[in-house]
Amino acid sequence: MTAHPTTIAPHQPAYIPWLGYLARFLEADIFVYLDDAQFEDGGWHKRNYILSREGPIRLTVPVHKSGRFAQRINETVIYGTDWRDRHLRSITQAYGREPYWPIVRDFVMEPVLLNRGIGNLADLNICFLEAVVDYLGISVLQTRTSALGTSCKKAALLDEVAALLEATSVLVGAGAPKYLGALPQFRNGVEFRISNFRHPASQAPALGRPIRRKPAVRTSSSPRLA
Image (cartoon, rainbow, N blue to C red):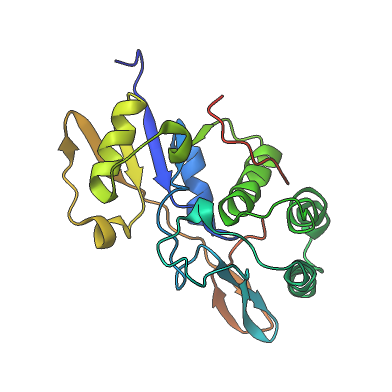
C-alpha cells in the first residue's frame, strides 16, 4: 500500500480541453491519460470549439477513419498538415488581442500545432496538456494506461488503474456516471469522488453575455510517471 493517500484523475485525452479538465491536475497526485480508450469520431478527441467575436468556431483535427472503426485514440493517425495552420490562424484571430496571447502562442500553440512530427491524435492532445501543466508549474505525476498495460474497460478500468497505482481515491468528472453508471462512494477500499469544479463566468462585451471560455492551450509526447 502507499505510504500516503494518493488521488488519481483518469481522463481520455481531448483536443484543446477546457478549464475543468485542467483543474483536475491540481486536484490529483497522478493524472492518468486513458490514451488507449476507443476513439469516438463524434466526441471531443479530435475537435473543440473556440469563441470568436463572430460566435463559436469548431476546430476539427482530420484523422484516418476508413476501415478503422474500432481503433483506439493512440492508434488514430492524423491526416494531412494544412489543418495546423488553419487552426493556429483561427485561434490567433479569436484570441490575438487578449493580454496573455503571446505566452499561449509561444509556449503552447506554435510548439504543438506546428510540430509536424506529432502524427498521433493521443500524442497531440497530451502534448497540449503537458505544455500547459509545464508552463504553469503544476506538480503532478502523469502516465498513460497504455504504459500501465491495462486490459479492462469502463468502471472496471478505474479499479484496475487504482490497484496498479495503489491509489486511495479516484477523481472523475461530473459526466462520468453517464458513461460508467452509478459510482459507489467506496469500492475495494478506494474512494470515488466527483470533481466539484465550477467554471468561472467571464463577460464578453462584444457578445453582451457571460461566456464559458475554453483555454487555448508546448510539447513532449513521452508517456511518463516521474
